[in-house]
Length: 260
Image (cartoon, rainbow, N blue to C red):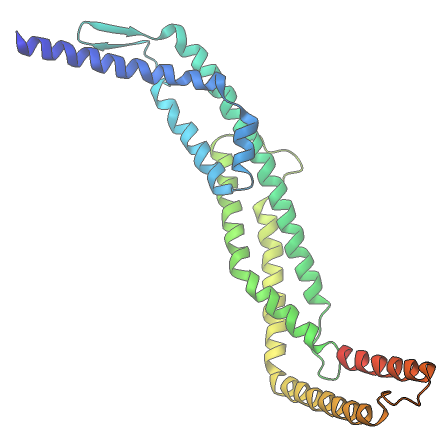
């Protein structure tokens, strides 16, 4: 008799657990999509995780059956299966469309970023006689720092586009395909490699130029300090207008040295 009671309790517990899985879908009607989308933000990985979980969550009701048996207990869920199915599909489509829009916006912004970087690099040329050598070197170094991160971004976009394709997202006509981004990315890397090679070939000359400019600036600063010690307007017989003129002159000379 005791074993019979244990069996009955188990069936009742199992039936209750199964019923609760259906009751949890009440959350589909209570969800505030705006809050969820705001919390997800631009985190592509989190969006993908949510969509995968939504897809996997269909296993409870996505079947041809209409009832489950637990001993003598029968849970008939045909009355709620269609409603949950329709609501789940609606929620899935809403999340999928929002993710698609967010991904497309991010991909377009990223494409513009690497396109601008490519154009900027194309306009830079190493010339040891030019005054903007520092700008050239700085531009190369800044782009090189971004390469690894940008590659990770492209991998995320490729993964996101594949997820949308698997879940039957309707890509709009203005969709920017990952292949287009990778084409721009390939062009940028080619230019970066070419410019970096040119820079490395000129490193000895660049170092010599920088050292020469440094020596020249130090000499100018010493001359300015020597002249200042002689012409400093700290004597009582100097007219205020003359003192202002001297100060203005030295300010201009100092500003010029800083600019150089």
